[in-house]
Image 1 (cartoon, one colour):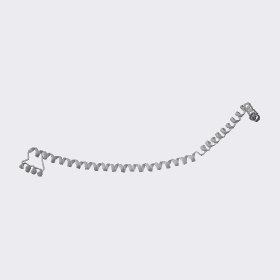
Image 2 (cartoon, helix red, strand yellow):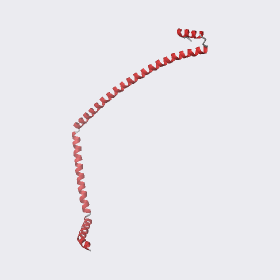
Image 3 (spheres, one colour):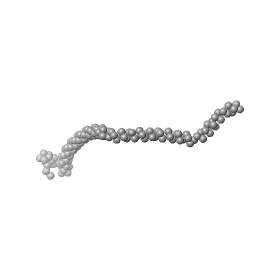
Image 4 (tube, one colour):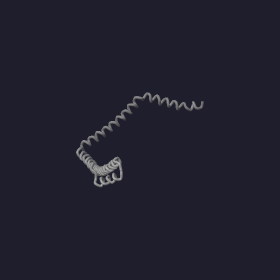
Length: 148
């Protein structure tokens, strides 16, 4: 393994002081893990910055799309109003004919109701006459029944 010059010197001093190779190997592994941890932390920082940039870009794009959609909705509503106005100008005769047909239909319905009422009055003439005479007789004899 290739070690940095400072690390090699430090290990040589540690050996001279009587450290065992196991402790030296553990120390080397620790320093190597420190370098790996530093590299991982650097990568994490880079990944976080990239994620934040992507999020900002996505929000910007979405905001632009939302603005464009709002403008499109306004334009579509204005277009629909204009189409309705043009349609009203083009179909005046058809609309007048439809309105007159509706008026005729309502008048026919009203006259049919009057006819139905008149026919119903004619059909029950005998029954109504009987009921009226019964009510009149009841009214005439009511004072006699109360006094008894």
